[in-house]
Amino acid sequence: MAISTTTPARAPRAAGSDRTTGPVRRAGSPAHRGDARLAWVLVAPAIVGFLVFAAYPTLRGIYLSFTDFRVLTPPQWTGLDNLRRLVADEVFWHSLGVTAYFVLLSVVIGMALSVATAVVLHRLTASTALRGIIILPFLISGVVAATTWSWMLDAQLGIVNIAIRQLGLDPVFFLGSSKWAIPTIALISVWKGMGYNAIIVFAGLQTIPPTIYEAGRIDGANEIQMFRRLTLPLLRPVLAMVLVLTVIGSFQVFDLVAVTTQGGPARASNVLQLYIYDKAFGQFEFGYAATMSLALFAMLIAITFLQMRLLRADESDTN
Amino acid sequence: MSASATVSGPRRRLSVGRTLAWTYLGGVVLVTLFPFYWILRTSFSNNYSLITHPSSLLPVDFTLGAFRRVLGIATSAESLAEGGSGASINILHFAMNSLIFATLSTVLVVFFSLLAAYAFARLQWPGRDLVFSVLLTALMVPGILTLLPNFVLIKDLGLLNTFGGLILPGALFSAFNIFFLRQFMLGLSSEIEEAALIDGASRLRVLFQITLPMTSGPVTTLSILGFIGAWNDYFWPLLVTSDDSVRPLTLALAVFKQSSPQAAPDWAGLMAATLVAALPMLVLFLAFGRRIVDSIGFSGLK
Image (tube, rainbow over all chains, first blue to last red; front, side, top):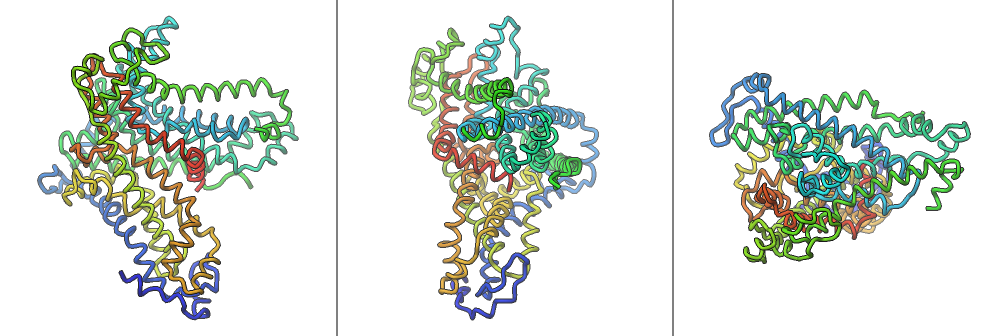
């Protein structure tokens, strides 16, 4: 409401000329006098949102992880009890193992296919239609993808198993067997996310000047050499970012599992986020669930840091 | 198309490689599109007849019954006669919930991010850089850490089972949106804005009549990506809603799937519901296909 008073845009032109702060600011901008008040008004909603729904919950989550909290009664401080429990909790370690297996499969296969698709697209065609088609699965929800693939992979009537039988092989109980549940969900996840990542990698490829490839070709490099010696090094920052985002996203997989197997059979696909959800909303152990969330957060930070270091993500090999 | 000829140089020598590459792309397109076709084919099938012709490429015993079931207009006798489970959902109601949830949360967060980004990019005020870098720390925190405490907060505020509870946590602030829009605004020439200021326009008028139109590209980008994200969100709605009055489509679909009997699922009905749930995204895709592709590529490169 104070907005109307903060608009003396006709301040003397000379006044604001040299009071610039940031290096980006060009000198000579008039009328920066009322800026501060207006700025706080404009930023206020974002600050409120940040404090109330990001900063406060983060701190509260850390606090709750040291408590016994069952929602209906106030949290009781229990120090490191939750952490001790977590270390001894076999289901937690099992879930972590299942999650790691899922992340490994979906990230390795997903990255390989995304890069391959992006490179092939880049070399063959600039067609937006083709790029559009491959991101279609990204547009639909995990629930839709999971439902569709549950149907296609159904042991009796699913088209995939019908095809497998026609090849003379035994049907595969994709989502119903302990052995196949996680690989199957990983493949659904790859199907859903591959196009999105390929588009980002494709955009990265477009920033590489074609003259570099011409030079490579003059030097007698073949396609594979050019891919290894030119494309991969130049793409490293983009690849690092896609990798980090995919790993973080995969660690938090939930909807695909919740709709296809609900963690089964026999906990074979009980990923960490499902276990956290079950502890919090199935057994109302919010304190313990918060401890697991914090542990997952710590792991994600460590993994991200490690990936960035290993990939030297901030620099490409251009120089 | 013609550009590829210039990029790939001597075409004949590479023809084997090119054939392989095109085959690979063809495979990718097939695997991408086939499930969509299969949704369509199954949803127009009679669920009983599906059992006898599971591999038919065309709808089996063509019927709109599955859609009547998910729109809640089939009688249970009709439903059972076509092999439905008897479970029905009023999918349009949930679609409306999704539309309200996705639209409001997208419009609000993009609007508030725009205001903040303008303040960070164009105004000069003490504390600007500090506040900006503090807000950016939110990019580091993954959802999992804040979800449970946010649920407790929404519960304490009495907002469970309301659109407020669904929308509010994400409506005011998005670190990525602010960063993205600020970055773009920094790249815009400020001369027109300053000319307008000199001519006596107010800062707010400059923001809405000059800066906003110039920023329409990234605003569209963020709106599309935000809408897709909210429409497809599952976990947060699962936490804060238990009541059909506000539940979005993703949850309704998951509940509908779980209520279908394990022994003889109503696959035709499930695929019809799936199609309806995906339809708005497919329409969005037809309307903004190129824009979405560009947005995704652009967002990846910052």
